[in-house]
Length: 366
Image (cartoon, rainbow, N blue to C red; front, side, top):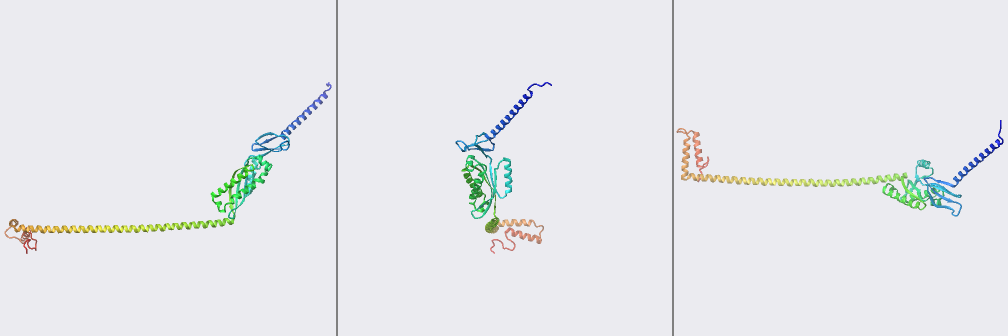
């Protein structure tokens, strides 16, 4: 087999060049990665950046807030980040549930933004203690100021947020007495006052208070019992007062009903008396009219009899009597009258001359 002169030498040279090129490429990539990681920094969408310079003419914190993006930083320059998220400070009596919520939020957001503390023991104006579960929602408004005053990370939470939060709540809610916590209007007003106070204090240090929430409150057992007894006594007094008012109204109603019944009885008596009076007057008038009528009738009858008797005593009257007597004889059959005919004849005769049986003839003067 024929071999070309210098072949092995050429292969060795090629291998050496390839190795050198590979090493150079690897070193270049490593250098680029080093330069990228050392000279660039990324601010995430839920973060704010604050630049710190350790060398140069202007050393310290740069008065500028950097938004999300990729930034090139020089030697001695560090980009610190703060969370844009809503921060939660929760004071609760049940730490297990609060810690579980804080852990879940940290897992989702990737950083600690939920801190828990014990419930706040509010000393009320009347000397009682109220355990309050309060939640503060806040955010970082000026990261440059926060970095200048509290440094990096979450040192500001322990150094400022927790103490200011507790003092603000105690100062405002402590103005109320224990019973005022039951009064919704007073309680809400006190929480709003506490929120206003915290907004002012937090704004001075580069933070923004979003909301203050009073979630729950509980009294000490001794006060619970005394308050319960007091409420029962107040409700009992109110019940007695209302029952007294009801009894008074019932008494007034009874008086009104009695007066009404008396008025009705009096009115009925008056109406009955008037009716009796009218009836008596009507009967009296009727009897008077009837008596007057009877009197006038009797007088007229007597006058008629007198006139008839006078007429019979005159010459013409005798003629009429004779005619009437002749007519009576026409009704008698035969020459002799029976007793019945004789009686009828006598009565008719008396009737003609106006004489009643048993009386003397009218106008005879006997």
